[in-house]
Image 1 (spheres, rainbow, N blue to C red):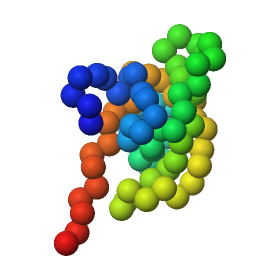
Image 2 (image 1 turned 180 degrees about the horizontal axis):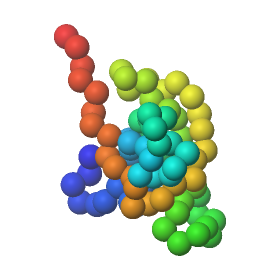
Image 3 (image 1 turned 180 degrees about the vertical axis):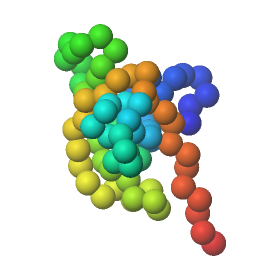
Length: 85
């Protein structure tokens, strides 16, 4: 979680929570953790962005590659998964 910037300015490597705040399609329990690999530079509707990356499992492992269209203001930092010893 970079302290020097907002999750509304995502970059490759960022881990975010994607839920109904980011887009209605991810509401009602359809949210997930997401690791960004690419931020598309194409013009979109104001305050929306295309992201490519991976849906993450609870242990932080990549499970599914996706491209998503989300509202910047709805993005939140994902907490780091706890490592079991």
